[in-house]
Length: 222
Image (cartoon, rainbow, N blue to C red; front, side, top):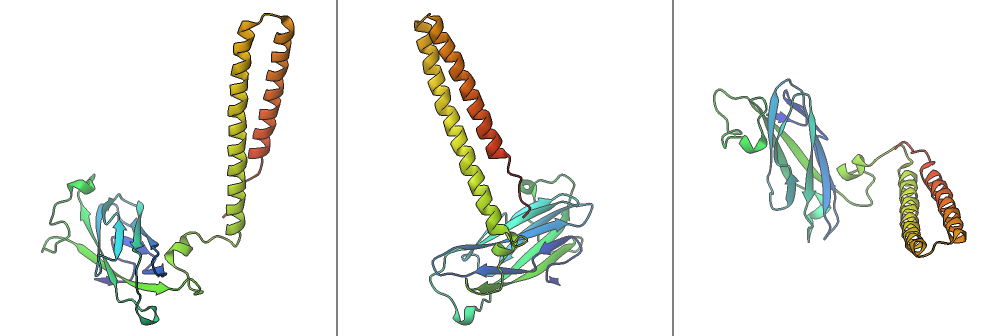
């Protein structure tokens, strides 16, 4: 059995589950499971407190040299232990399975120990951190950038708002053009046709300007 996040079949990061603990609020921690072999490897996640945590997926198969993400969610709690101390533990089991095995095809005895099977186990500790603590949880670690995270998120929100506004305006203009086309079919004078052509040209210029303005901002590196 391996203590920590490293063994022969798979690697696990991080090697400790850290949750931001707030009463009546959920918190999550993502685990990255990487297959370090040329074989198909099946895994299973167990915990000493199954009622407190929601694990998805709790069982799976990782292809050779591939990886997957396991999200562990701490359910909302009504009370906490003194000093934020947590005795919960997780156990990650892994074993080699036949090529192209699907998770739904795993036999019931896949993770039972017997003489001819290699079953590795990795223990993961659990710790709670308060929202004001300088220590980071898994949730914070997965979103950490180079110091410009909040600025990047603000830029993304602004671009999305501008895009949505441009799309909405385009839809309104298309509806107005359709109304003009219906009116045109009821009128045959040349003056109206020239007005319709002018409006269509103006709409095209406006839409082009909006799209150029919306998508001209270069993405920032997180």
